Amino acid sequence: MKYFYLFLLSLLFIITSCRKDENHPVNFYYWKSNISLGDTEKDYFKKLESKKLYIRFFDVDIEDAQILPKAKIQPFNAQELAAEYIPVVFITNRTFENQSQEELKRLTEKFLQLITEIKEKNQIPESNEIQLDCDWTEKTRANYFFFISELKKITKKDISCTVRLHQIKYKSKTGIPPVFKAYLMCYATSNPTESTVSNSILDIPLLKDYTQNINDYPLQFDIALPLYSWAVVTNHLGRIKLINGVTEKDLSASYFKKIGENIYEVEEDCFLQGMYINKGFTLRIEQIMPGLLKEARNYLNEKIQRPYNIVYYHLDKPFLERFTIEELR
Image (tube, rainbow, N blue to C red; front, side, top):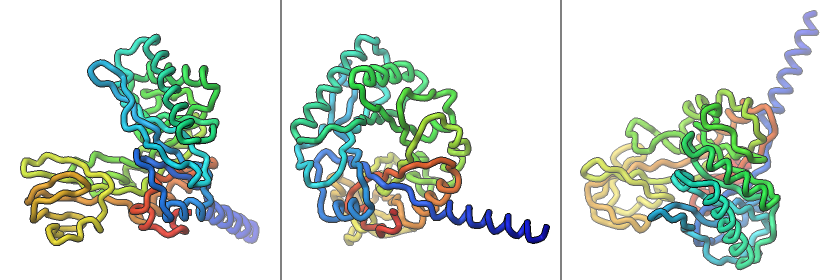
């Protein structure tokens, strides 16, 4: 009996060890309108044996009662990267408010026409998948899900979508989208305007709370994880804005004074990533570092009881350089 228990313990240890060492295929998002894939981006993509680049084609929003495409990607050479390009379109939640089914059908046609135009202009080979990115609510759920169903009907393609953490935890309220696969966004976990938050991009305790029942999610899913950073800028009146893509390296100039962990004070009027900021403003840098990413990956690897891929957000040199290939593998 003693040896039997020892055998069981050894077997459990082996199974657990294998699970912890499990690797998941890695792909990337790309979220810039002006596409620039340099040597660093190509090197990481190749060495991580990535196959797919989920590329944001354009945004959709409503303005003056009209639904309009915005931030369309500029022409680029799709042959520069050996990748399957998956079109991704970000659609604001308000786009789906107060729309009739006829209006949504017309939107579907225009939506597909623009995707086709972008593919043809850039000689992007056809893919079987189109991905939607929308933070839908209970109020817009019916219209959004109808839009997805129309896309499936017309294109005969696999339609996927992103799913936020709150849509995982409260799936009975928000509903399950009629897609073939979900991409669970394990980032933007907190509100960056809250001063008590140490890192609103990825808060591990909150991630754990919202994914307690992740294995019950009824769709096939992959996991989207962050690599990006931003600056939370606070002015003299306490108003807050975000500047995307800022790292601590960007604050090496003499007019940025470090006054705390990841916190800086502006000592001279200046521009930062194209935004004008005044003397006396404060900046809080939030970024994903290797240790934080590893903690999130280890938790998800042990928690999730099914195969999944990882999609990093996003393929951009300033973010990639914080990590070794092995730290992303």
